[in-house]
Image (cartoon, rainbow, N blue to C red; front, side, top):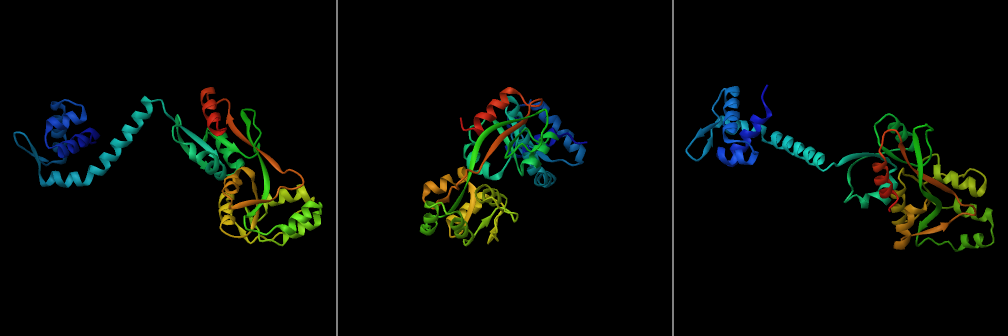
Length: 297
């Protein structure tokens, strides 16, 4: 089998033009570089360089071999340097499971400077917590205590409130009259007449809000079903339609003045997000680092 160092030495000689510079580039002795090259030439059965006093000229066989292997050698060298750097700096890779909306809104803009690398998986709370139990993830941002397990800790990190939002230009004077006189039937009928964006065809968030405020299931046939609340907010920003979304997701849109709160509801519809981890598998130091990041401390 060919020693990878033979190929690396060959590429260095080809690029540097002589043994002296190549050995310096690789931090090996010149005799070792000569041995690597001689071993490779013996293996391939052809001379790869013509030796001149101060220069190595690649033969046709050398040029052909270089073209075939240079990309692979450089890629492997880059990977090796990356692992060596990470090891020397004690940088580890954090495997995080998270709802895509939470990651986009709260974490994506705060990655620079973290003391770890990220490997992120998006999915539902139950899917992600199960992956953590199976050893595929280190931490999960969970929208509920999806799976009860003696080793799994659920730390509350955020309470989200669900609200109805619409485009800033939407006329809501009629709705406001119903709200002012606490006319729930009027409020519901006005809302039912609007074009709705839903996260899922089963009206997951809308249904929860409706049960909390009207004590019944919504009779809504959504115009658009989009399984991403950030995308729904962007769509509402660009045109009509309303939806039920989390307040922290809508905050930036509301502050920009492109989306507005249509109704907070008579009864608060809230949910707690948790930082979940297996206490038997992660260190206290890692828990503290992740906690500071996700709680924006």
